[in-house]
Length: 390
Image 1 (cartoon, rainbow, N blue to C red):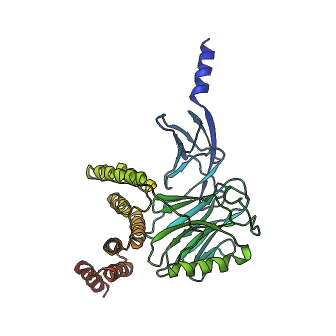
Image 2: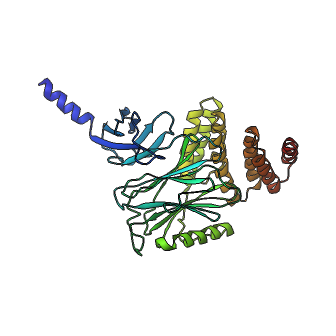
Image 3: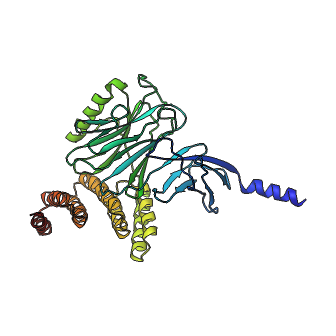
């Protein structure tokens, strides 16, 4: 009798078995042993497992997973990966911690089909992809052609004055003019800065063979594109080149998604932001970051939440993440024509570069601040850096 009671209890306690595989995002087919995989489900106690020598882990979830189930993967020397399920039979790629202030890494993963999705990065006269894997501070670390990924591009150092466009192409169905294969691939792009996974992009549920994911402006501000279009492999270069020119001119596209924020979502975001401010003042920086991220999940165009997030990252001495959050605030504030906030963010970025001894970038951002809004503080910073540079 005791055996049967135990068996019933065991079946109820673990309602789904999740199998995952963990790879290094920057080294082809390198399995990661000893990574800790954690499943979190509502108020249930977390369940954990560690990857074996083949990079595989088997996790016994306490109940059926859904889109509210969170998978966290941790390993020393790598950024924590946090993703929503479904997660069974997925391959996950961990990003080694980035050490440079303006480094960015984009890691593409997807399902079993289509077999070949390609990551592309365009900037200036450069095109990073399978056929040309490195140029001017950017590199295709891993190219995958048999499903799942990862396919990884790292920008070690951005070129000042160049606009970047990152896109994903369904190479398997490159010549199709009516395909949902990319939309149904489960493709995600994990964006890493410094020690942190700062953003996850999910492929839109629309027809297309090209997914234009994000752009980095001439001064470093990161903006989401997240829309689908069609083009063949032979035309991908010219197509994305024209997109860069369009983005430089400030024009929009009919394919861009309309993002409508309802009043309730904005109200929730404002409440979460306030909770984050309270946590920050009480010294609980981790909790503050969680609240700010929750606010931004509700209302992405919340410049104040990005400013607050940058302060929390600064408190943790995560300087690359601080710069990223400031750039996000700049992109939003530019759309809102809030020159005071744009100038202040440029100045804050300049201070970080000055503290790190990068006087060239410090001067560039101080001048951007002054050109946006002429204030004595910005003029003094410019004079100080020029004197230090002599």
